[in-house]
Image 1 (cartoon, rainbow, N blue to C red):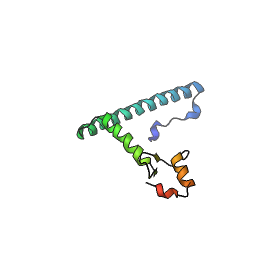
Image 2: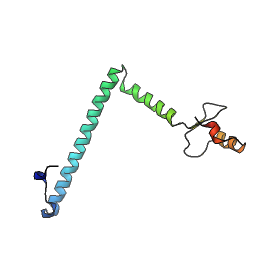
Image 3: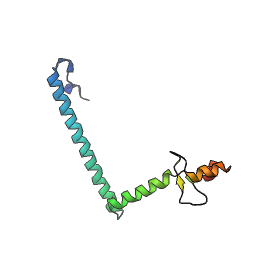
Length: 107
């Protein structure tokens, strides 16, 4: 930060401090929007380079994220999965009660 732009806040009254705060918040919002815009432009370039649309990439990402978060899979029905968070699914509770080890279902 450049020291020539430093403001001594102790010398300002409440209204001046509020004005600085409001201006700073507006600048923060503007820079955040600019950052999102820049990211979107980059995203469009990536989609175009891969021959896809942004929507296709986002949909694929959702699918990959779901697959990546799966930690346990039912050995009898591969559609039954669990991320390891929240309540254990009934198929896993039953298997554990029957003496199976949770690591038997680890992905």
